[in-house]
Length: 69
Image (cartoon, rainbow, N blue to C red; front, side, top):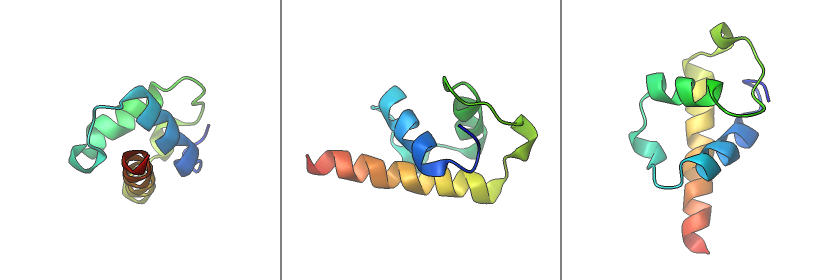
């Protein structure tokens, strides 16, 4: 995965951290958690606020979807 794979990253985060409310995650933690994901292989310096916002938004969507099941 790369930083631009925001939906795939969000799904992986939702799977790894099912009890975390993505709306309450700060970007410092979010960035670190992405870097620690299995299969993530991109330059750590290429993350920025817009990328982290996109990942967080997808994660929120994923968490909302899971609640509907």
